[in-house]
Structure formats: C-alpha cells, structure tokens
Image (cartoon, rainbow, N blue to C red; front, side, top):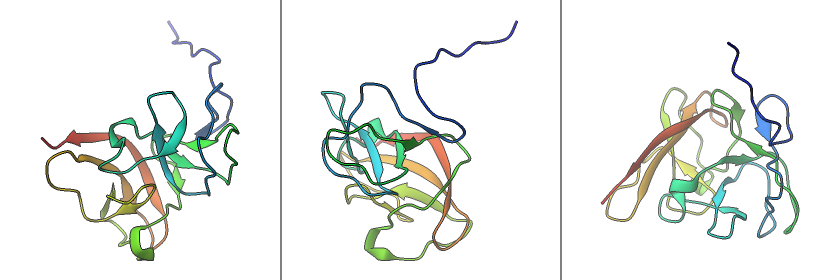
Length: 137
C-alpha cells in the first residue's frame, strides 16, 4: 500500500514553504533557521533553538512574510559560514554558536545542541543532513 503525504506545505524538490509560518525578522539566503516558541521562523544556533533546526533560508525574506526553507536531506545548500571561512570538502558541518551560521567545529559544553547540518562538498556548499542532533548536558 502506498504511503500518502498530505498537502501541508507548498514547494517542490528540496524546499518547502510551511503554511502559516512567518519570518520574525528579515532574513537573507543561506541562514540556518528554526522555530521559536510562538511558531515563527527565526535564526538558530548551537546555543539558541538549535534543537528546532528546520533548514536554510532559500532566498531573502522580509519580517512577517512566509519563508522558503531548504530542508530536504541531500539538498545542495550555500550556507552562511562563521567568519566567512571556506569549507573543507568532505568534512562535516555543524550549527555554530553564531545565530544563522555554520562551522566545521562542533560545539562543546553545557547547553549546546550539536547539530550536524551537512557535509561540505566544496569551499562554499554542503549537502544537507537534517537528522543528526545531540543535546550536550
């Protein structure tokens, strides 16, 4: 028996635009985002709402607008990298401690959520991995 998927999001391919979910603030493309307690799309990091990581913004969006989020495992993403550093192809990429950004250095210490968001495929791109999260107590 085939498994059906409800029409609960607008999108094709690697991104979705969740219905009735809006940006809390202006966002540019390539930022790591999650959901706040009121269900708005916000920047996330290893120390702030990392456990709600949804994916990466697909394009710029104004506050109060719906947000297209690249969220499908295996999607190519050009994320905002902490410090503007180049990525190392083949290396894992994690949410950084800076809101909306990624890094090769996994977070350590109490209160951080270690989220491997992907694997670098070039100095500027990653393949998205959406299911590797560890809360550090």
